Image (cartoon, rainbow, N blue to C red):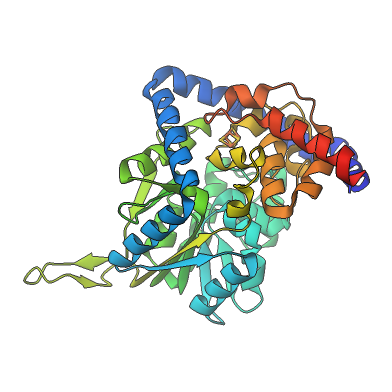
Amino acid sequence: MLQKASEEIHRALYMKSLRKGLSRSVNRLVPAPYRILDRWRYLLGYTEEIREAKEKVLNDIDYYIDATMKMVEETKGHAYYAKTKDEAVKLVKDLVGKDKLIVKSKSMVTEELGLREELDRDNTVFETDLGELLIQFSRDKPMHTTAPAIHITREKAIMLLKRHGVKVRDNMSTMEIVGMVRLFLREKFVKADAGISGANSIAADTGSIFLVSNEGNIRNTTSLPPIHIAITGVEKIMPTMELAFKQAVTQAAYAGLYPPTYVSVISGPSSTADIEFERVYGVHGPKEVHVILYDGGRVEALKDEVISEQLYCIRCGRCQAECPIWQLVGNTWGGRVYGGPMGMGWTAIIEGIEKASSLSHFCLLCGKCREVCPMKIDMPRIIRYLKMYYFKYVK
Ligand code: SF4
């Protein structure tokens, strides 16, 4: 494993296109959160509240899973708990059926499940986040948690879009390219049989899902198709709606885009009470909302005092952008889904500690990740622990 990872990273160091794409984007990505935090200083207070709330939720996870599911049902949604990847994929497949058109918004949990590939066997699936659409077309893995196509240059983006039927030309400006993608996806949104999303957070006291986006794709994905399926890791549960909002916007801020253009709050299917105040469901938005709370190793990880700290992560990707190794090779340094500093803890959670331990050796232990993390996760401690594990049990 160590040898294989080492070869991949070595190859990435010589990939001109990857290096060019990363260096162009990193120069914009790194300074953005500093400017935001300097201007909207209350966000620093939010991070402390979120960390405290996460401690509460993770210390009593069974209660919070149960409470969230009950509230989803109370708002006329359907709630499910999936312990394993197979269970989660089966749930979605059963809900969607076959030969359907599916639009999907970017979600790292669905990457964990390989959901697009699974559904694509019997259906047609389109990613609707532009970055993730480029990842779908290039059959690559996301290189950053919030900016998946950060390593793809403009030139490569045009080539990929052209190859998949988007009417772009070589000399088009970024705005013109985006206009063509808008046209390409518009028809899919309208015709889709189901929309699939993740969630930035979910409130236990109301069952509401919070989703942040800038492109507007999440609004279309979650409101135009008749069925909306949301899948989220159990660590995204927040005790209250207020804290769920704070978690969602804080993630956007630390990802470098604040204020976010859209924050969607979804509490069950669309409804009306306009005739004699009788509430009926299924109006202009989805007729059905299904919420899947996914475990996938998270609950088991709570037993490990060191690794479990990674579950405080709000997936902003700031530790990746600031990491000197990630800046060179992106998520090539990482497991199947997650890379960079946060990717070590997450790989241990979802793919096993042995795999993560082999990857840990590429870290320099400079400590920058801990300094910039909104949740103050001690990633160097997690990585030292993984290195020790490797020499004790794997080597
Ligand atoms: S570990 Fe911290 S900095 Fe990295 S993605 Fe998670 S919350 Fe953001």
